[in-house]
Amino acid sequence: MTELVNAGLAAWLSSAGATFLLIALAEFGDKSQLVCMTLAARHRGLPVVFGAVTAFALLNLLAVLFGAALAAWLPEWLVTAAVAMLFAVFGISALRYSAEEDDDEIEEKPGHGIFATTFLLIFLAEFGDKTQIAVAGLGSTSEASAVWFGATLALAATSILGVFAGRKFLHRLPLLWIHRISGVFFLLLALYALTRLL
Image (tube, rainbow, N blue to C red; front, side):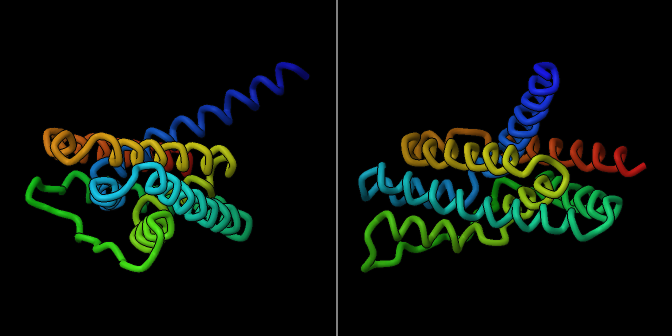
């Protein structure tokens, strides 16, 4: 019995860790992190972090529920093939990233508290974004709670980095290489999904 519990915990932690790594790499330097940096430059950091983390927790919950529902209704081979295709597209897109590319600038909406402003900006910017689709894909093939935990922790970490690192530090990081690593990781996951399919 103890061995079963330990094996289940190890599988859960493995899914959460893989999700954390994938989502953190995909989101690093993305628009949501830049939103956090911009808002934190003018406001207290704590409400920005809480607003971002709350938005991500809700978005990830919607994504894993959608992924789990798809997995329950569709044949496993079809879900796995769709996940492999999505990851391949994300990987190729990340590898094609050029240093000149900039995410769309998102303006702060006046008249809201900073928590509400951050929540709305992140929710609207990330709804249907590649990371949410990736979370839905992972939620269809892995333990949903592990995927939600890993993704939310990753997005919370990137938001906190965005708030506290500041613009100068982020501009010094080689975003091109971060996108390259992210692209390779997505392609490896697509390959893994294909091996499961075959």
